Length: 321
Ligand code: TXA
Ligand code: MG
Image 1 (cartoon, rainbow, N blue to C red):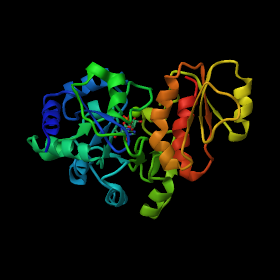
Image 2 (image 1 turned 120 degrees about the vertical axis):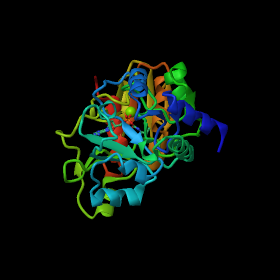
Image 3 (image 1 turned 30 degrees about the vertical axis):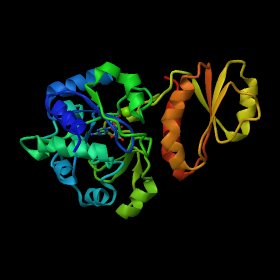
Image 4 (image 1 turned 45 degrees about the vertical axis):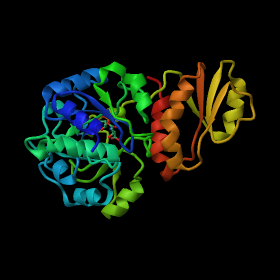
């Protein structure tokens, strides 16, 4: 085990903030059992205190200790997809306190697969008096409402000196946040689509997964204009892209599957497969945002189930405040 990991676990124990890589996006971690650490986390993140955060664990056993009951179906998903890019929302146990759950009666739990995240979580659990008490609350390591970070460099730009340490772990492989499945109200519901598709979840469960229910507990990924670049961005159907570029008299940055025929000031080519696209998405949005243009035009990906998670993030990136 490296010194960096040992040091990160010590910092967490002492109530500090550790940014760390996960397979989805980089997280901003704090000891989920410490009111003071959590208060600092919310402050740095500039997140409203009634928004719950996801707690990360070294193993399913530790994670489930934070739930007061674990439905058989939730266990089935954990078995199939943990460690990995899936968050389960369950009724909380006494370990999950109000300062983590935003005062709701539920807790979001996840066992990530990134080797650096796993090593850190294991070391953190070892240093605790009670291993099951060792959860690391971690929202994405960006300021509230901005594009999530998928590299350590993104975190440095966003949070810089506000974090005690940033663990390096390369570019996140999945590139978009975990899928969130809520089991707290009986029938499973997909609160946030992710790399693991609704269809894959349904197959593993052998039952339908409802789409996000408007009545579901508050979750900031469900707010309008999340994951948003500062430059105004628009989604444009493929067939209209050149016409829209031609109409603009502002400097435009374009995210497209192929080179536009019309001249543009800045453009990036995106992969035609949803996994490749997701992996590159946030870095691409950051790059376009930094291109000193007045508008960002995004060629819309196909309206197909495999693209649901990517389209969800794009719709949020372009939705006006
Ligand atoms: O992939 C991920 O999940 C990343 C990495 C770091 O693990 N984390 C992440 O956290 O995306 P955050 O806080 O940026 O987004 C968590 C989402 C928010 O929309 C939050 O409100 C929702 O999960 N959430 C957390 N706990 C919840 C709960 N008990 N009930 C409903 N929604 C919850
Ligand atoms: Mg986030």
